[in-house]
Image (cartoon, rainbow, N blue to C red; front, side):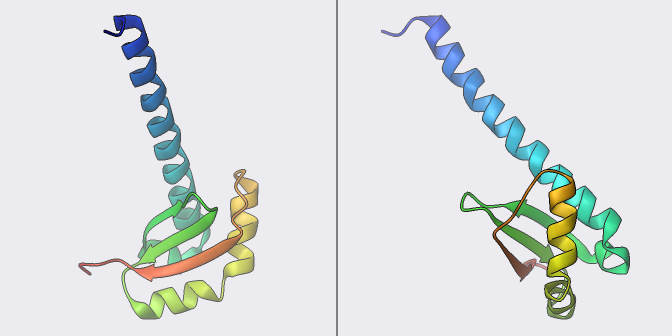
Length: 96
């Protein structure tokens, strides 16, 4: 039987990782929405995957195509907030 302090320590460690992940995702999404001009309003989600690939979801294929042409700009924005994606994927959000 595990001691309660060990159980709490493990659970708090997991919560810390989840909190960091959510903070990172929020920071990236807010930065892109704010700094991508007119395209920013069509970005629905942005996050880094474990393999350091930045996923950007938008409302339709046309916007995703336009975002692909902004790769250099997006990488510079990410560097400013402390993230350096090795690759960027643009997807269409399901349900739009």
